[in-house]
Length: 501
Image 1 (cartoon, helix red, strand yellow):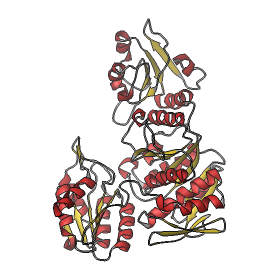
Image 2 (cartoon, one colour; image 1 turned 135 degrees about the vertical axis):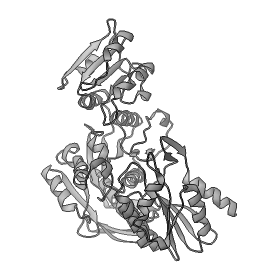
Image 3 (cartoon, one colour; image 1 turned 180 degrees about the vertical axis):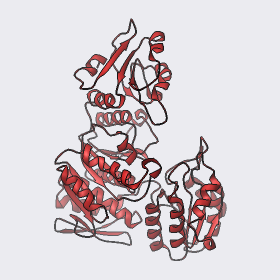
Image 4 (tube, one colour; image 1 turned 90 degrees about the horizontal axis):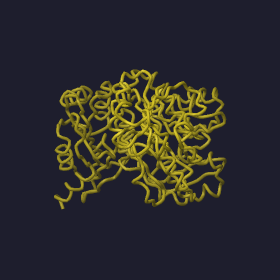
C-alpha cells in the first residue's frame, strides 16, 4: 500500500511535505519506535509527556524509514530532514493519524479480541483465556506484562515487536496482531492497563469482550488520585467496546454497581462472576479443588494455581470464553476434566522450590497493597509454621503505598524483610525508610541488597515455613539509576539451594 492510498479519505487534517524527488514507495510498516523502523516504513514521532518522538527521526531514517509523521505541536525542524533525505513528512495530530492509519494498513486482524483491565490479575486472566481456548482446540495468544504467549508451538516469534510495557504501543500491537492472524490465530487476550487506556494504546482495535478484575490503589504517581485512576479504567467500557459487546465483571468488588452502570449506559452485554449472585458462581476453592456453577450446572475440577485470587482470575477468563463462544455444558465438562493442565503465568504465586525440610519458596509480582494482601492471605492458608515475606517498592512510583505495604506485611507475616526493588532514580535507603514507617519493627529486618536479602531469608527457613519473594515476579532485571541490571530471582534461589545440597 502506498502513502497516498493510506492517507486517502481520512477525516483528520494533515499536511504532506516531500523532497523534490520523493517516490511514493509501497509502505512496509508503521512504527512509533525508531528501533523498529524498516525499509520503506512510516515512523510516527509521538509527542509524549517527557519526549518529542520526532527527535528519533534520524535513527528511523537510518533504519530505512521513508515517511515521517510529526505532531503539529512539535518544534522539531523537519525542513532540515527534507533537505538531507529523500523522504516525505506528514504533519498533523500524530496520535489521531496513527490510530486512523493503523486499521487501514493492518486490515486483517484476529477476529476475537479480549481486553482485560483492573488493578491486579490482568496477566493471569489473559493467560487463562489463552489456555482455556487451547483446551477447546482454538489457536490463541495473550499479550501483556510477560510478553506474547501462544497456546501452540510456533516459529515466528522473532518477528514480534517486543516491548516492556503491560499494554504495548499501538503500532507494535497492530503489527503483532496482524502477524498472529497470518498464522491463523483468531483469539487474542490483551492486558489493558490504565496508563495504556489513558494514552490511547488500544485505539480502534475491534474488541468484542472486556473484563474487569478488581480495583485498588496503584499508579497514583501517574493518575494523581483514585478518581482519575478509575476513570482511566472505565475508558475500556466507554470507548473501546461497542453496543452489545460482552462486559465481564467481578460482582464481589465494591465498584461493581458503578461499573455496571457504565456498561449499561453504553449498551453492553453484562455478565458477572463471583461468590454471590453471579452468573458464574464460585462455590468453593480448597486444596486445589475448585467448584463453580454456571447455568444451573455444577462443576468440580482440580485447579493447581495457588491463591483465592487465582480462582477469581480463572472464573473471569472462563466466563469471557463462555460468552464469546456460547460454550455448551459438554464443553464446560471437558474444560473441568482437563483443568489440571492449566498453570499460573510465570511469577504469579510461582512455587520456585520446596526445601528438604518442606519449607516452600514462592515468587509473586505483587507490587500494590491489595496485591500483596491477597498473596499473603493465600500464603497463610498454606503455611503450617511461619510466613516470611521479602519485598521492596519501586522508585519514581506512587510513594503513598509504601508504608501501607509495610503494615500489611507486619500484620500478616511472622517476619518481614524490607529490601530494594527497582529503586530507579530515587534514593534506595529513603524508599526503605518509608516502608519501615508502616512496619512492626520488632518483626522486621532491613537488608538493602536484594540478592543478599534473598540468601539470608532462605537461610532462616525452618521446617514447613513459607517464604514469599514479592514485587519482581517474572522480571529478570533490577533497575538502579538509569541501568537495567540482570537479576533473575528464580535463578538466585535455585543457585542458593545447590549450595545447601
